[in-house]
Each structure stands twice: as C-alpha cells, then as structure tokens.
Length: 356
Image 1 (cartoon, rainbow, N blue to C red):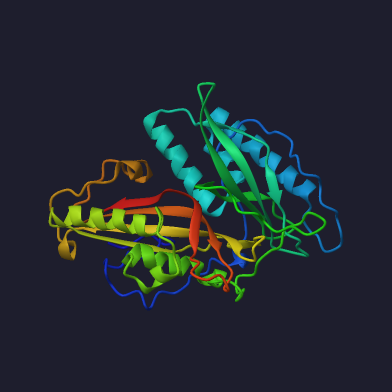
Image 2 (cartoon, rainbow, N blue to C red):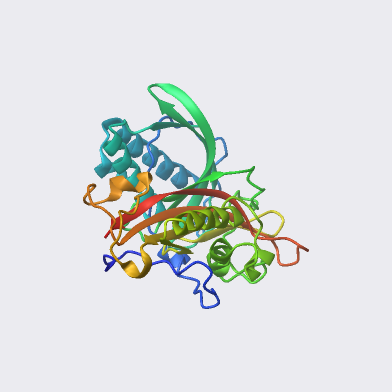
C-alpha cells in the first residue's frame, strides 16, 4: 500500500529500539498559522497593554485584535456550519483538527458546536521581528442548543511567519492543571525561550522526541527518567499497547509511532527559570494482516470513518489511522533536582485515515 504524498510514514513495529529517532523539525521557523474551533463571546482582556518600543514587534493590543478576529470568524463559520471560512483562520495542528471536526459533524448530521470564551490573559513575548507569535490562556465553555456545557481552560497559540500573512491559530491545548507563573518584564512582556536553550532539563528542540520515546517504548525507556508519567506519556503507551494486544488476539499486527510534526514550536520562560514549551506531534497507527496479506475485514475506528475518501472501503490488508496533537509541557530548569518534563496541556484528534 503506498501512502499518499504528504502523509506521515508508517509506524514502526512496537518495541523496535528508538535510538535512531530524529527530533523532527518542530522549529520556531515553521511558525505560520492557525486552526479554528467555533466560538462565541469575547470579553475584553483585563491586562493593560504593554509598552510599545522598537524591539516589540507584537503588542498586547495587536495580540488582542488578532484573538478577537479569530473568535468572530470561527463563530460565524460554526453558526453557518461552513468549513471554508473556518479554515482561513487556522493552520498546523489546529487546521487538521478543525477539518476533521467538521467532517465528523457533517457525517453525523450534528450542528457545529459554538464556544463562549471568558477573559483571556495574553502572553506576548518581546520580539523584534518575524516569525511572530503569542499565547492566550482563557476559559472556553461549549454551548449546545444555546445551553452552556463543559468549561475547559485553554492555551491558544497564535502565529504568523511574515508581514504579508494574517494571524492564525496554530494550536489549542486543554490544561490539566493550573498554568504555572509566566515570567514578565517591567513592561508586561513575556520572554521567549529559544529551541536550543541549554539551561533547561531538555533543550526544547528535543522535547518532542523525548516525549515520543516514552509513548513508543513505555516506562522502561531510558527517556522515562526525564519524562513524568501521565495520560499522554506512559498512559498513552499503555493504551496503545492494549490495542496492540487486542489486535494480536485476532491475528493482526498493530503498530504505533508518536513523531514530531512540522508545526510551530515556541517557548515561554517561567518564573522559576523553566519553560513552557508548546509543540505539535503526529500519532501514526497501522493495523494490518501479517505481511499485508488479504484477510477478513479489519475494523476502521469509528472516529476516523468520516475522513475516508470512500466511507464504504473495507480494510482487507491494512487500516491506517493517524491523529495530530498539540502539546504544552513544563521543561524545568536544568538545576532542578529530580525534576522531569511534564505534559500539562494537550488536544488531539483524527487527521488521516485510509484502508486497503
């Protein structure tokens, strides 16, 4: 089976050594855009605008304008159930998630959910040029049929690569705990952390690869010594290993691989000297008959069916089901004794499906 151009490579078999893993380019140079989830309501920000100087290419005021523009366009798209405008204000992980979200809702005949946002807090780094980016932390409440539902505390990464591009939403992640204190200067600006900062436990440019080693190999991986256990590390490994065991019981081979994605990776300095690192990842899975021989139909995960070009296709040889994730992790200072990389926010969803 040949994977269409632009799709991630097939997953390696579970248990294969990951010593050759490459930290894929999740670099800050890739900053380009945004993705949308529908939304409703936009309260004015409470924090005062930071002072504008020649070294500040992004102000809190401009960040607020970009944020409010996103809210307006994405909510309009949700109200109309129209994917086209929704995709104009998103990119990277958010683009893939929004596209699959709309596809699933159309498949089910369900209206696109809308969201009501609380008062955002903006973390705008003191930047002097491009690429530009900022992070907004805000409470988001799902509204269905005019009635409020669950509320999540979100991190929203906005970016643009050059002057001629509009701001877009690159990724959103749901916080699993309170956001730690972000360092700010006297003017209210945050401090950007470079991808090769060696003062941290892990250089940010290897955070994704180290995280992936634990997901692929589990708590026995050497990487587990510097990555905290949790739902998206050892927990995700356990879930995938259980799926592999279930498929083996049916005589099938199940493989998975968490790998870096070419999405914006950025970092904000924390008050304790550590960093909040935001990055995107792919989770690629393959469920196949041994040696790709023809056999009984292989089940296609329900969440991925709307992404199939032909929803009647049957997996006689293999089924490929990939997801995309946006993560936020605390990378502690290198001097912190016993500290580990800690994934504190994430959001994931189907991004690709195919059956052969």
